[in-house]
Image 1 (cartoon, helix red, strand yellow):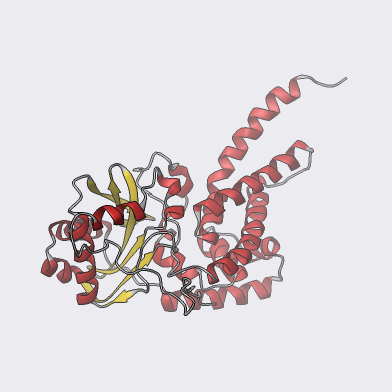
Image 2 (tube, rainbow, N blue to C red):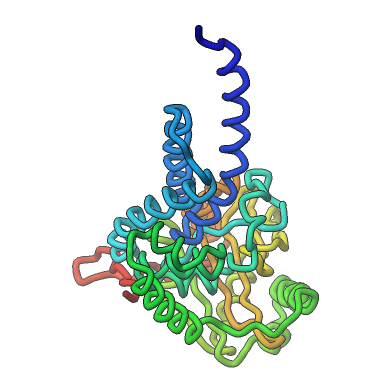
Length: 346
């Protein structure tokens, strides 16, 4: 005789288990893909497979390890197809930002609770240059603490091969990853001064906070006006930033909200309550070494209502002759007038 009580007790327990596994799965998928949207799709499919296996009565010794395996393999497959799309991406590609200080009601803090210090834009950009296998091995071993034997089983390679992949990936990341020697308190104080100078149009004050080799990167994806290419150097970046803010200050309903972006200081830019951009600062040795501005509306939609950048440009243009775009140059154009894609390093 079938025990009718089984479904009523097993289902809630299974739901609780899947809810507990979700942050870990999202942590792996987001770091693998650099995209909230793609990570959510991977996590949904991974947890669905876990659910089906449990429902079918399969014996899973470690649901956490099983979920990590399924999530990683799905993310590797997604990353392979995503890289092909990103090679055709218009302008510079940046990860989708997440707000890690609870300012966004759309974001669940549990998503970034695990090893939040490895979410930085700087690291995710560096990881883009790794192969899917290298990226998976490095994250699983160095970030999530899996042994080489466990990683080998997850990615389907021999342990010696996995160790070699880890060494190469780690060397590549260490060569390109910035060394941060600034405390969180110092970062917060420097970010406050940075945005205060930006708001007031204090060019000299802003320039004094920038590293001599500071980099400014904009990501519009061809869907919002942005930089055609990254800019470098204290003077050039300071002038560009003050030009942007000078134009935006003409909007009475423009608001700059300091937030934490991927574990680093940053800000959201809103017009009439609609999100227009997210800036993330990279602070190194007491100076701002990088500014990453995400304006692609597709990469902001998970954070709340997004504004119409093109309508904003028209509004600014109507405010007077010679009005400057707050996001400067249009995407590069090919000889045929089409947006020129930017290829990512392999």
